[in-house]
Image (cartoon, rainbow, N blue to C red; front, side):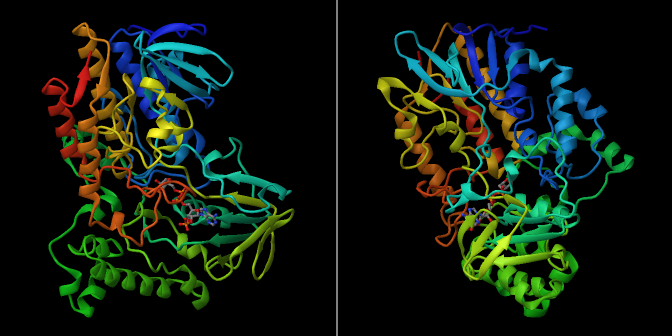
Length: 544
Ligand code: NA7
């Protein structure tokens, strides 16, 4: 096997990659297979990306992990025994480490290395990538494999720095176990990270106060341990499963609750009687609400489903005030990324858990001892920020990227990200983004989309090298048309409803333009488009 050897700074590489998550890891394998000289720069201390950083209690995959795994390694598919349907973070990180060991991936990686800037040299057709310690890496191709949810969002709440207790962000969780025994804990946020961690923290903390701004629609994860029969069945038909994933809407072959959510039927909720809706909810559980044909398309139908959802909360939460506060209102189900949980609502029936509804009782400031809301002071020993990420563009914009004619990417993206297929950006030759904005990315099984992008990008580099070419750049017109198409397919869905504020739209970050970023047209359609673009001589790209 051809191995790359990271060299000293100012060396010339064929490719510089940023990020050693699942994308960067697979790129090592692919770039080595091409015999290229490359280096992976990673700000973390090891491989794993999301799973390296998000070590909070309860962190786990929200889709079945038999599907959220590499397909390129057939031996690993057969030898790896996933313990649960939706594996917990430690198991996924162990899996990532196993892959890194099997392929000696770390040989190609430089950890604890943060990239500060990247500049395209039009004379040399090369990128100069500079780290925050001033090391320089020159390369023909520059790949941002920086993940979609990798820049934690610290909310700008007055007095945040004054707090004297322990502060932790779920997306930057310490490596050693955090023991909450006997402690008063506060958690800000009720998105996926909070929903996963609240039941776990509640089990050991003396007291847990949940500061909720927007109640969440969450469905039971349906997680369970896997037995040998289940695993043997999957292993026997992995080929088919992968094939189905690649042609599907969300990159999944339909296991577990998320798969069932995708199974939209033909029946409309608006056409069903009250009794029929209730009956289906009892028999099929909450996923029945998303399976009606009209719930994803019609706001009135959606509201019927939301109403049933709220009644379901009233049934499971003991305290009526808490139940009322937990009921999502004013935005449609399906506008945000679907959260799945294990015992989230049940946690609010514990004596040591209380909910502070920030819509009624807003945070006034954070002070030395805790959080001060309109109704009074909440002293806590640990304050957890489960406040999400600067999604999709955060990590790319964190690097000062300069393309042709001194154009800054941040300026080009001032009114929202623009790219051709989420792979390349006009004016920025030889820069590729893995699962970039404008691709299915976060609306899909990330592993399926990551493999597809890494295959496409490395095939492209191989094509250029084989044909004596050394630049590729998205054409402005192709980019404009693709951006238009991305908006068109999202239009009319719950994802872009006027009442929706999600990180897909960037509205969780103050000042970020409200622009829908991922591609909703489906993994299968998108894959076919990328393949045909390549087959037609990289249609929409200028090769030079
Ligand atoms: P999310 O889904 O962005 O959730 C962040 C939560 O933090 C959400 O409830 C926010 O409320 C809340 N938040 C953010 N800023 C504030 C302030 N200033 N005050 C109060 N509450 C605030 O991030 P997660 O980490 O949970 O999940 C991200 C993805 O990771 C998830 O979709 C999975 O794919 C894995 P808001 O809704 O904005 O009112």
